[in-house]
Image (cartoon, rainbow, N blue to C red; front, top):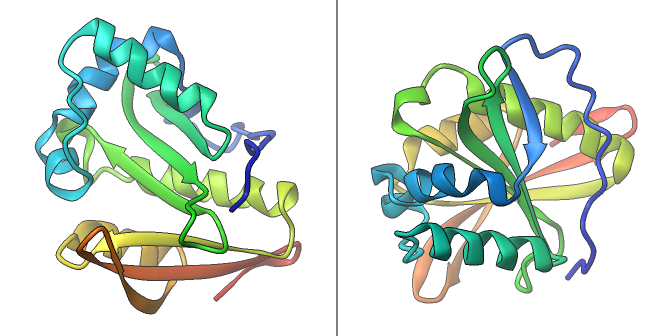
Length: 179
């Protein structure tokens, strides 16, 4: 398992609609809304975050974990947070796992694709010649379609904590992404 946070120099000039910023305590109200949204609960799971105090604790836990990086996807014009893109180094994977989640009102508008594309582009320069994974519940068709659009390919089915997950991967090189 990787045990340090990834330092990315996110070049956001090519993103006219959104920007990414590291998750911090100012995002607590947004975190409450996101982790209690129907998509999060169905595809990611219950986090028991209902109050500001619980949101602050959840954010502190993320910030203090060197294996977890969260970036908030914000609308550039209004700075409104609409989702997250994540990088998590899991004990059961040899390479980090990319993830994303959006508030329901902002799904299917290309925001996750833009954020993940920027992230992957900068991941290449920060971690050349590495593989990156995505683990997805088999019935999460929107995420599977997005991961495939980003160039990930199906690798295997794995079981984690009694759940069957689809494992996708993508080889990252300085010349660009490879499957």
